[in-house]
Structure formats: C-alpha cells, structure tokens
Length: 257
Length: 345
Image 1 (cartoon, rainbow over the protein chains, first blue to last red):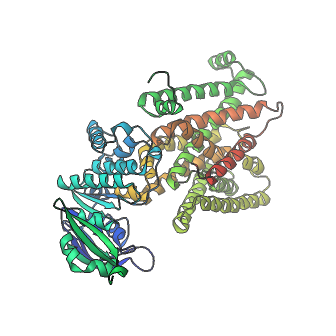
Image 2 (cartoon, each protein chain N blue to C red):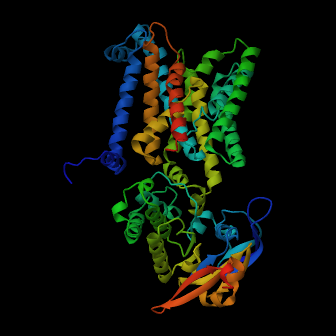
Image 3 (cartoon, helix red, strand yellow):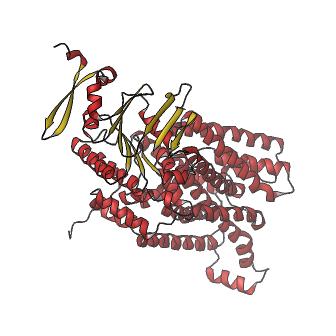
C-alpha cells in the first residue's frame, strides 16, 4: 500500500500539491486529471526524485525516505515520461533494470541476463535486441523501457503516461501488456492522458485536480458522479460493445443541443 | 543473406560482443606500444632500438645513447603517454557526468584552473616542486565543482556550460598572467606552461603526478557501468537507486585528479580531452565500459604521436606539442559545434 500523508511536494516557491493525503491500494490504479493537476509530481514524490517538503509518503507503512536508495529501487520501478534517448542497444537498456539488484562490483550474473532475455522476448523485442534505441520507433522504444522496468522486478510499477505520443496500435499494445502485468500480481500506478482508455481499463480510478484528490473509485462510479463535467469539462457517454463498456466524450458546450 | 553487406553490419560487429571489443583493445594496445617505441627512438638524434637495448644492458652512464634514453626520451615518453591517457579519460568522465558532449577538461576551464594553481604552488613553495600536482588537483577540483553547481543553478544547457567554461578559463588565465608578472623567474616558464609541452621534463618532477594518475585511472576503469546508468538520464538513474548527485561529484573529482595531474607537468594541453573521447565514441559507440579503456589507450597514443611530430616537423627546431594539439583540436571543436547546431548527435 502506498500512502501519502499530508504531503507537500514540488520545486520552486509554490509546491505542486499541498497537504495531500491519499492511499493507493495494491492492484491497478489509473491516475487521471487535467494538465498541471500534480499527477507526475505524485509519482515522483513516491520514489524520492522530487523533494517532499512536509508530510511523508509511506510504502507499506514505512517512510520512503527511510529506505536506502537501492532498497527503494527494488520495491518501486518508475518510468518517467520525458526522456532523452540514450545511445545504447535494447539489450543493454533492459539490463540496466538489474542495477538495483547488483552486488558492489556491479557484475551481471547469468540470472540477470536470463531475466532480461525473458523480458525482451515477452515484449516482442527479440529481433530488435541488438538495435540501437535511436533507430527504433517510439512504440518499440517504449516497449524496451517497459521491459527494463519489468526486469527491475519490483512489487510496484509507476508509469507516467506510457502511451502518450505513440501510434494508436502501439498504445493498445502497451496497455494490454500493462493489463497482463497487473493480472500477474504487479501493483501498477498508471497515469493516462486519454480518458476513454483510462475508464475502459479494469482498474481503480484516481482523479486529481489542482493537487487535490477529487475522486477514487471505479470507472462506473466516476461515470455516474458528474465529476467528468466539472473537472474535465466534458460530457461522458458510453455504450456496450459485446459486454464491454466503451466510453466517448463530447464537449460541454454541446450539452444544450 | 549472403552478398549483401551493409555498413551498419560492420558497426554492429564492432559494437556487439565481448570478443570484438577485446580485439579493438588489443589493436589499440599494439598501436600504443608502437607509438612508445617511436617516441623513444625518434628526436633530434635518432637512437636505434638496438643501441637503446645495448646502452641499458651495459649500464654505461657515460654513453650518449644511455644519457639520451634515460634523461630525455624516457621521461618525455612517460609524460606524453600519461598526460594523453589522463586527459582522454578525464574527458570521457566529464562528458558523461555533465551529460554534455561538448564538455572536456579544457573546454570547461578545468585545465586553466589546474594551471593557475600549479603556478601558484610553485610561486608560494618554490623549493617543493613535488607539491605541484596537489595544487593542480585542487585547482581542477575547484573548477569542476564550480561548473557542477553552475549547471545545477542555470539548468546546464550545452552551450551555457561552454560559456561558463570560457568565463572560468579567462579568470584563471588572468591569475596565471598575474603570477608571471609578479615573478618572471618562476621555476617553470609560464608561457611555455600555458602552451603545453614535454620538452626538458625530468623524471623526478613527473613521479608524484604519475602515481596520482595511475590510481585515478584504475578507479575510473571500474566506473564504466555507473557512467552508463547516467546515460539514461537523471530521473531513470535515480529510480534505479543511484545517488545521482553524489556519484556525479565523485566522478568529477576523479576527472579533476586526472586532468590536474596531467596539467601539473604537461601544461595546458588543449583538446585532447575532447577530441579523443569523440573519436573513440564514433568508432565504438557509447558504452562507457569499453569507451574508458579505449580512450585511455588512444589518448596516450595520440599525444605520443603528436609529440613525436612536434619534434620532427620543423627539426632542428621543436614545436611545443600544445600548439600542434590546438591546431588540430580547435577546428575539430568547431565542426562539433556546427553538427550540434544542425541537430545531429
């Protein structure tokens, strides 16, 4: 369980959120919210790459600042959104996921390599394993990063908009892999920009706005709450397609028509 | 698949596999041994390898071959090889730690900082020249830490770092000028020191710096995988459990030992720390585990060859090797800047 206990965090004179308290239970949690609502800051504060000014973030009841860095990296893996593309092959990127597990001499064992190979082929990247990341498409690269996070072998996985800027086909592929991981028992906190994708995933929804947690519950409850109108300025609609709920949105200005 | 040969196939062959890496290191080592041999033999008088071996075996302190070998060629060769290796490895580390391909010990002002403190040490303690490398190290360290904190404050744009380096460099050059005005009879000729070169170097003056370089090189050869993690960017490195800030400062301190020690006896040799890492990266890719030893070997060989050229190009006159290095390095740096501007790399 990840718990934010009266947390203020952020750079600069004004923190992104102040006195935020919320809980994320094990399982799949999808975080949505308008731009600047503090979604990224929420994830960053959980792994200590953004200073926590007040309050504390607890992982299973223990303050994350009490963890040794390596120890925390064996509990929580994080995929940031904006990254420069390093000049290395897919295989060496994925192997970096083993970094927090290496002993002092940082030598990779056979087991580390097997782990990486497994993740690479699971993500369908086997043919590309010797290719340089800079020669790959955005979707392939994102899969390589996901493989690296999987290889980190942590109970928790935090993903900051992993589907943004990808072709729609790759978006679905990434989301389906994330669904599989959640099904296999990994605890995932996923920031999504696309509301329809967020509501259609089988997960717990968390809505942030202006650094405040505004909703926590199921997609169905969110749909009926009327919060989509007030927070996102859209009217939600849905229909059932072979027993699956499909969501779509119209602008608020069309309400009267 | 036969018959179709692609250039990237060669690149992949080169970059993949431990075996081919060992081959490349072997080739570079052979090149370095050759360069050392040439540097020992060639100069204002040519001494054949046979004569050198005979002179060393006879141990005849009066023979000219013996004297040339022990008092001129050997110290000079050691100086050139070690300063080349140190500056090149320092460049690899600084580029990775600052995340800036344009950085290098001379570009960010580390060399001039080390130079100023070397001269300051010699001015304050004229009887203790063995303190020079220590002074140089502190000068280099002050510079890298200054750059590091300026980066943290200004956001470390590639060109911003270069400009900060220019400012720091000019500041310390002014310091060097000030000292040479104060004491024109300084133990070291300040203007020769600013150009950089190895002529008339004595083994006794070299030794303390050589020890420092050897230790720092050994430590840096182990830091390849750490540098690779930094390639992923700060956030990823932190989320993998690395203390990014502390690691950066530690790496920069090693780079300061290397550059500082090299400057303490070789003077302000420009561009080795920029040029060699770039050439090595172009051939071998960005994996720092192979880049560090390769840059070490190539840097040593490169400075040795330049030093030999500086002895023979305008014989019987000798060109300080710093002039040659700047003449090669400055245009190279401009080309890099232009490529960077066009968005490649």
